Amino acid sequence: MSETILKIQGLRVAYGGIKAVKGIDLEVNKGELVTLIGANGAGKTTTLKAITGTLPPCSVEGVISYKGQSLKDAKSFELVQRKLAMVPEGRGVFTRMSIQENLMMGAYTRDDKAGIDADVEKWYTVFPRLKERSAAMAGTLSGGEQQMLAMARALMSHPDLLLLDEPSMGLSPIMVEKIFEVIRDVSKQGITILLVEQNAKLALQAAHRGYVMDSGAVIMSGNADDMLHDPRVKAAYLGE
Image 1: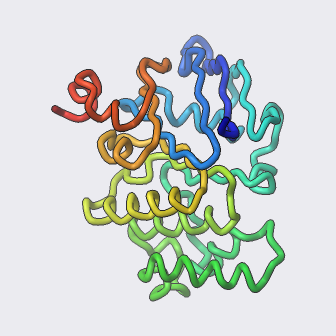
Image 2 (image 1 turned 90 degrees about the horizontal axis):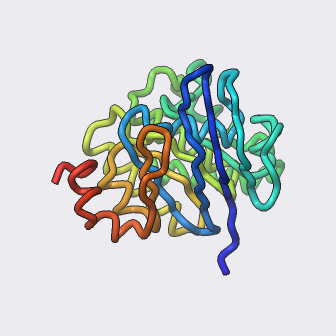
């Protein structure tokens, strides 16, 4: 049996009378890349924010457990210490800090200086553009470069679970290709990933399993390759 890293049971999120998430179940096992796809407003980002405790005031019901322990009442800043990292929609880089400083912030829970230095060089090798501009303020980077930096910063914490929220949003096709190449490589290194993505085709091609959300509910789940070839998924999300 695979070890379950993340388990969501009966998650409901409501803002006043608006039900954003309507009792979903979802799980991610160790070493898996699982994707959550669906149209805008389906409840995907709300689900990730419920996991990380970063929702605005609202009603949250259900069970979210990470490595067998409930995340109820966990502070978002504690999650990095528990090896759970998230790359939020919009990247969330520290715009007035340099690329180098952003990467070091990703490692603030670590004290292995040699390992940190080695990881900085590793991500500079993966993203040469970041190395070229290591002293530049993160706010001066393009959207694609900020996405590279946000991913590298999250990976500096050596997460056991990486949450990615719309990593391809607003990027050029070439940059999207690069980001997904890195996502696949990170997955091959054994890091467990939950990927929220509007580009259903790329997400399912990269993932082991997938969930489809619509209007706050999970309407389909299964093997990612099977879903890629499912006529319903093709018609609704792949434009085929």
